Image (cartoon, rainbow, N blue to C red):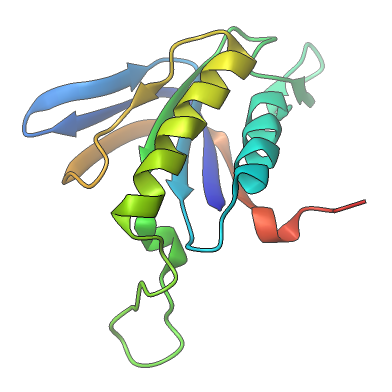
Length: 152
């Protein structure tokens, strides 16, 4: 699994002119799911997202977590995070999980993040043509990949 986490002061997802998810202070999380991803990957990534300390404290240092600032999450499925661009100019998405595998993992990520944060998770619509607008605060953007996790 791969996630692009952006600290935002506001973000929203619109599908066919209707807002499907909207937050103020918090994280916009773009989530890519790969065929090889497991429940273990999901739980590791969810805990990292929920615990990430990238909000400023009273000294301007990134020491505060989502819970510390009462922030929210807008979670957007994005298979293009697994684009392969090595050959040619047209990306290949062969590594991205097909919907039959990706949808249950995406829905499980919503559930796990809800449990970890104690808050409703705002979302887009899996597979839809989504329009995402955001104000990246900082800007702060973090890329996380479960292939990079330390297994010790």
